[in-house]
Image 1 (cartoon, rainbow, N blue to C red):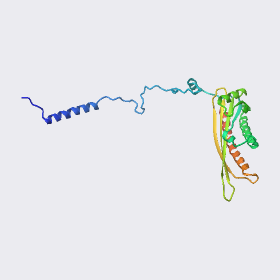
Image 2 (tube, rainbow, N blue to C red):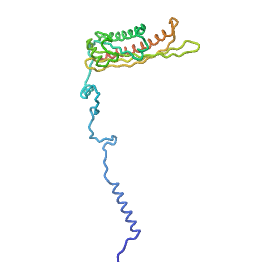
Image 3 (cartoon, helix red, strand yellow):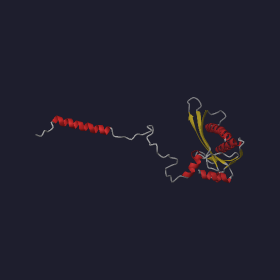
Image 4 (spheres, rainbow, N blue to C red):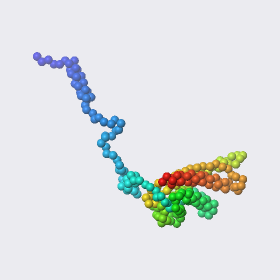
Length: 244
């Protein structure tokens, strides 16, 4: 006589099989990361150079590694060439016949030259004329122009300034001017930039009695803001040359 399993027995067998499968899946081996704080395996290669293919790069990957790994020292004796980059937006505001504007720009140029002459390391300071470079020169053009003048470093600067007037009903309007001056030192031999500075200053004043009109007051206040930036950068330049 053949005995068939009852319904209860079959249910017990099903539960037993499912339980066995579940326990087997829980006990399956899993990979263990030895360093839980990093999501990458310990044997990943160390990246030491760029893996991006930049066809527009002007410096090779090999030279980038040499520049970053190498050391740099500015020459002890310096022949300086100064380059003024004219702000295109501001240049449109003035005509070339604007005598006051031209004198002011020349005064800024002379002041920067004077700041470098104060360092005992500087043997000469010359101005790169506009004839040697374009209106928007590249670093290559500036470097080649400085080479023609036998300069060790090129000092390149740009000045941007503007004014804000706050009119008052029963008194003189306040005139607020701001100026931002950017300056870099380009080493001619290596093409490196060992020094850079960006300084922004502002000043607030009103028209003085001796000033003939509002535009004269505006020019004075704007000039004061620019001079503040130049004196600040001059102090930074002195500190830089003393340390190097």
